[in-house]
Length: 305
Ligand code: MG7
Ligand code: MG
Image (cartoon, rainbow, N blue to C red; front, side, top):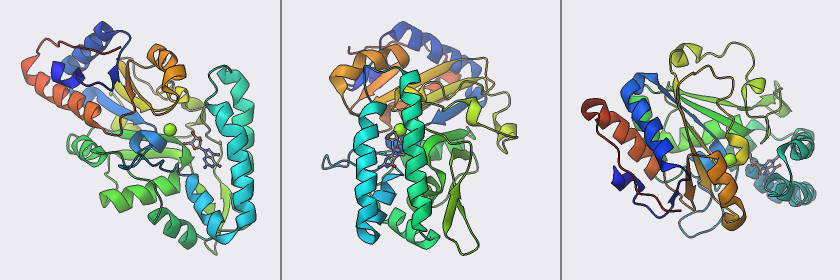
């Protein structure tokens, strides 16, 4: 098991607690497990192999605007400049950030709707976008599907774009994967005319935005344990309200501002992966849970802090 953690990107505040959670999950077995994951910069890469920044799902519209409507690009840039620093500000509280996030998403979506982009344009730009699944994400998603472990992708990005990326890069979306996100609504001319409500932004990713009867309810009922993955501090409550009374193991990808954010991430996430563009650790954990279903082995961890 030390192999899992003998990795310089892994940081843990409380390795004993991680060990305890893993043990419980191993005892309970894979049929009690589900995964809840963020998409942008969690399932998708933050940087490519050359160290160049990748895009979020909203970033597709920066590219569309750059080509089709430079004035709109200017407006998106101004919004980004103003609000991104608030989203990741280490000094502001979540409560202080929320109204700004609503402003950002509302304005951005209104600009997209006003520009009347077609489905074809959006899908075309998505297929040529710099959104790439993390290294070994395909392998992880394949293993989850093979073991019928539900994967709930919970994103404040744009669900239609996630779907296109998944279809392009995985071939198809497994039956055990479900996307909860902001969706574009197209009119009868296939023009993007609105976004679904309630709006999902960085800091309201919890049961308050999961409305109605979810079609995947049957798949997650009885799944008492959760592995949660995110790259923002707003991702740590994604399991709140999802009925599970067992263990939640939270894995945080810290992509930026390592020095100022690491302490906060260590307080919020069980395992923090610093500047790691791979799904190696989640895969190792899943492998471990699979194997220990037979062995019930004692886990020994070495960590780097
Ligand atoms: N994000 C949120 N919004 C925008 C936008 O209008 N443009 C760009 N380029 N990025 C945006 O998964 C959600 C992530 O997407 C970013 C409205 C935020 O930084 C957020 O973390
Ligand atoms: Mg994210």
